[in-house]
Image 1 (tube, one colour):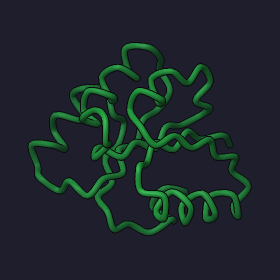
Image 2 (cartoon, helix red, strand yellow; image 1 turned 180 degrees about the vertical axis):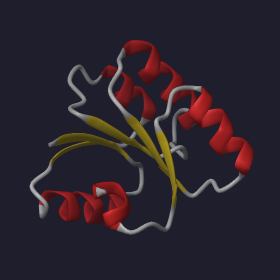
Image 3 (tube, rainbow, N blue to C red; image 1 turned 135 degrees about the vertical axis):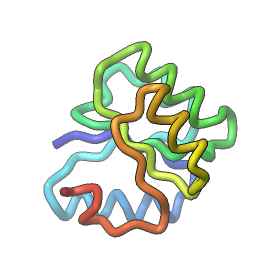
Length: 107
């Protein structure tokens, strides 16, 4: 399975990429919202951190959803209920709060 990982924290991105690749996934990683919006082929799923350096992840979520039907899973430290509700309304298919276990994403 191919995944687009949108994560600005290099350590988090590296650990998640390693974990996903160990389960046979192919990971394309970008660290900004603008870069995520430019990706032509995001694969089968998008893992989207909401705390990005150049854009709010909610804006990125809306932009990604407007451009494609690829499932979006928000993976974020934002645990506020309003962030979750808004993100899901803007097009995310699921919302996972950090810290999480790899099995949550694989399941």
